[in-house]
Image (cartoon, rainbow, N blue to C red; front, side, top):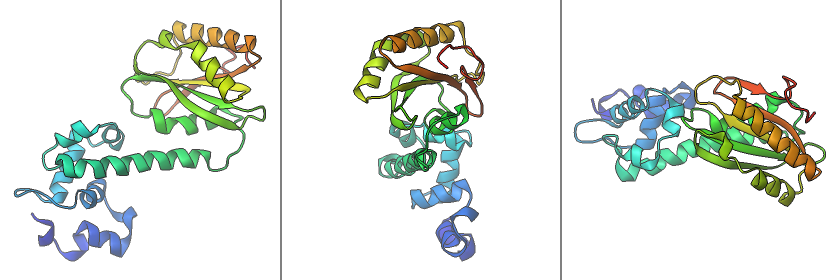
Length: 229
């Protein structure tokens, strides 16, 4: 059914104008971005197909690149950039929300909330560092590895170089486990100790190492597994 054949109150754009965006389904919001359908499908049907390709998950949709989006019937090159831009704005909103108070980073929970917008839903491991000044305010947030499964590839010299370049005092190491199990491996434990020692040698301090999953995390400092505290 074409969107023009729907009653006015059920058309996504009119529904948003009359009720507000919060009353629309994910597919209806996507249909507004998609704007037009194909000869055989409405924009709403194309939106449902797009969600189906992402297994109904906005998280998985957010990790689809332009090439993958363009493979969805009805999307093509003209519509994929608008969808990608909207998803990126969502990520940036989450990141800005995490920083909104600009307060000192004192707890593993706050670190998790700051970093999960970057790591949620990834099917590969990424390692990030959060650099803090002497008052534990963030001065930089950087990805140091990505796209692999071997944490031993983390370059501790690059981490120290970045900390010194940003005039940081504290380093927080964060990486994700796509398996959903946040418990650290022996390699994770060894890496933590290596970076701790490298930091001490340069008058820096490894404040914590978080292993994160989509809805949980493991904090080395909370578990007393590092002498950094």
